[in-house]
Length: 248
Image: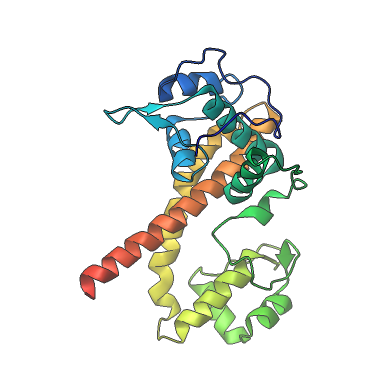
């Protein structure tokens, strides 16, 4: 499927007026006029996710049309301005290409869009923070179990005694793993790995968060979510690969 220019996300002529196919380096330079934080890796990622489909030369080099570049710009705008996950963005652009009249969803709070990290069908409290009693009720564990998890750093309360909403998911998963005989001490390596991955994400987004442009700072949150999703997928793939080697 070849993409045609789309105007639903606020086309502003980002694509070059030169209709000759462009290399990925040229595309990067064009996009950076509006999106200074974009990288070649980002463009390749969007291609891998099916957001754009550049032509390929016989040697395998990507060649982007002006329509491809404008589509990429539309994707980046929707991420920056509406905090939309890529799946929703793709559905929106595909609908526009079919000639359908569609509207963008209302902008969502960044913490509601950790795509691929938590189960979207999971029932959980809607507040950003929960108290200790709420956490115990949501996870159906007792005080002793929660205290044990806290002693190993798997669940970390704030100074006021409250917990981030993610603590509910963590607690449920720790409880599920416990039914297979995995104790909190066994999970310290998983916790340490997650903290290292969070450090890598922070290294990438820190320059964006320090940017003067508030839209660039907001885009840092979308970038962090995207990196978190990729990290989770990579971890799952590596785990499955390791299991196939050990348990053929």
